[in-house]
Length: 198
Image (cartoon, rainbow, N blue to C red; front, side):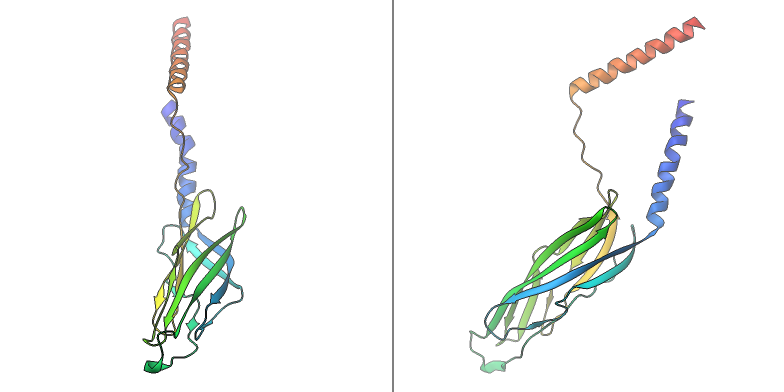
């Protein structure tokens, strides 16, 4: 009888979890890009102002395809006549504001930008690449920032909604096990007394 009660109580919880994962979640927010460039033929950074985004994500599905996030366009190349000092470098910062059921969460990442105008090479390399936002108590939002290289470069971004890892719980102390055992023995004793009384 007790087994049937436990199964009946657990069924709605399990079904609710499966149903929730089948739903499409509209994840919204915005990002702001800024940069600090050093001396040299400093490039221009596209999408410096804050841009809103809205992504329809399904838990357990593949991440959204990596799309162009912004562009970095060099100011111009001086070809093979450049000296060794004709380089540019700097830092690109992206600040995210993610709208979650519990309020707005903020997260950011930085990337190193380097350009060598003599050899016509440049790159954007993120510090973290993968940002994780606790979207809810059950779900995490993974934001993947793609590195990029070669002249006029387009770093990419993709979003993925995944199950949040279960919360860590402390291991019960030996005294807790003893208390649990005492309670179970008492319950067993009461059950036996009731059976004898009948």
